[in-house]
Image (cartoon, rainbow, N blue to C red; front, side, top):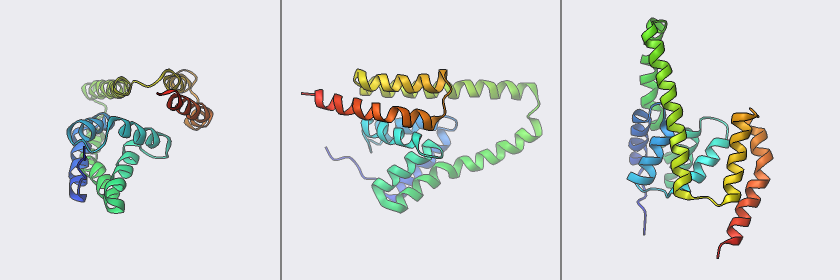
Length: 182
């Protein structure tokens, strides 16, 4: 089945929506929009660009927007997707920064911010669980993912060490899994 190929304007407007609606949890919302609603990419393709986006410098949501924008419409697509992703939220963020400057020490505002941080963490975990459930990775690949989680969350290793240390194992696990398929 042929999947739709978005225009530059569609990339901008879709990522503008993702940036505004997914404020604080962009990757969870982006996955839903790009994979489930628009069907521009498959679950596997989204997981791959997200994985690459997470090991590249910079915000992973931006890295994904640039990769997908470029894939569909070249440099203009990358520019449109990234501008859409950050344009709307930048305006909102500037307004919130001014409000925080004026009211940031109010106890109710502090409580709202703490609750928002917890919700954002939950969204990240929910996205990871949904991707894992849909992809159903083989045990060797899942083991590399769990090792990365332990390296970052428990051992507090820097991301470059985790990536460089586990990359050979991830490549080997993917190769072995692919070879083991009938």
